[in-house]
Picture 1 (cartoon, helix red, strand yellow):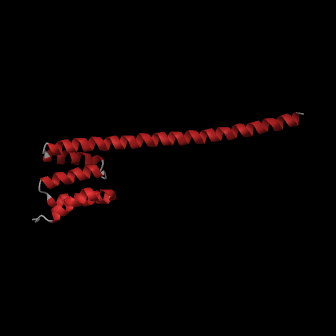
Picture 2 (cartoon, helix red, strand yellow):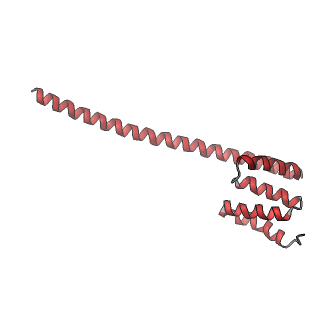
Picture 3 (cartoon, rainbow, N blue to C red):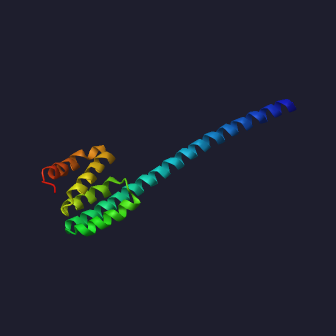
Length: 131
């Protein structure tokens, strides 16, 4: 009788450990998913702020301030295509064609899907007589 009770308790212990393992894996999955969502949301929000601020400066034709803003952001986010893109546009408006061209090429390296947005500027620079 005692042996049967011990075996039964061992089976219950095994099942409880199995349930605990499954719950732990599920918890880790949900925690990882939530952390990922927070990170993605934060990145999207950061990029939206950068785009908003940069487009405001561009629309005001304050290209020196736009260049300054982008250089500050570039220090924190050197591979952010939005920052590089707006910096390239500022350089283009400031007639820094060589720098603008390099920046537009960098955008294409960072984000392959941006060709349609960047290629017209590269073509415009290539058709401009550079010093």
